[in-house]
Image 1 (cartoon, rainbow, N blue to C red):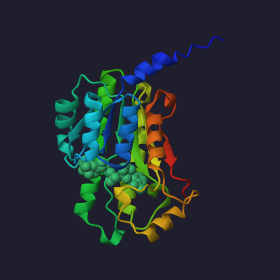
Image 2: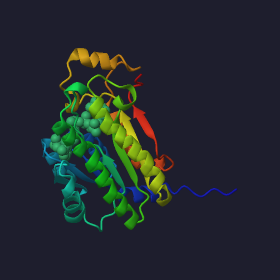
Image 3: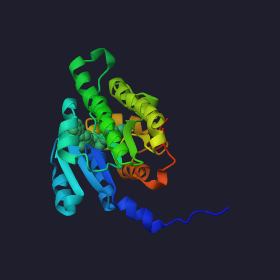
Length: 257
Ligand SMILES: NC(=O)c1ccc[n+]([C@@H]2O[C@H](COP(=O)([O-])OP(=O)(O)OC[C@H]3O[C@@H](n4cnc5c(N)ncnc54)[C@H](OP(=O)(O)O)[C@@H]3O)[C@@H](O)[C@H]2O)c1
């Protein structure tokens, strides 16, 4: 049987023109992912509330290849106008969406506060769902076989004291992603979750050494998860090489039990 030729150069050219929307690019995993995408030649549309020095450096280095929008994802109602109408615009095809921005409201369940819960659900769940709605519309409009990646957490699968509310937002994303893959697979749109283990970023900076060591001891590798390893897996899920992977939870967690 004849095999089709693998025209490597042509694939690369297509990938070079990819536009990637990433939330939470000001620091941590989102920043690392944005840098890797830019190094690959992708154009990055990045969102966060803060213009960190790293954001300024990316704008200076990559010019038009990196566009940044100051936006607070708590404002779910403004997503359509501020992100899709006034910023990216309908004419720009979106090839991948990395839903990375999140906040962690951690406390034991008996202390639960509705205001904090509401804020976390807006940022971690409602905004990502609405963003996905417009990303998929744009992918369909431009006939793009796109890739959607939600960043989930190992806390969904193992459980940690104090993380029940936070883990519930990530569990919602995992269910949403699985169902997105079923609903839009026929159009070539893929949806996966990257289930990250404990990484040393600002989000986890409030933990003391004792708490951190207890978390590391639940992993096979006995150390924090490498942010670069997680970001590289996201970039792989974006790429054409991952074109048969959808509806999955990909764990990058140092082998957490
Ligand atoms: N760190 C861990 O151990 C760990 C483990 C498992 C999963 N995760 C997940 O990995 C992802 C990245 O986390 P990280 O550790 O890199 O956290 P991080 O260092 O705290 O970064 C979070 C990013 O999200 C942005 N963000 C937060 N609230 C926002 C809002 N209301 N509007 C717009 N942007 C907002 C932040 O930007 P601004 O503050 O500038 O807005 C920042 O760029 C998250 O989904 C997190 O749940 C983290």
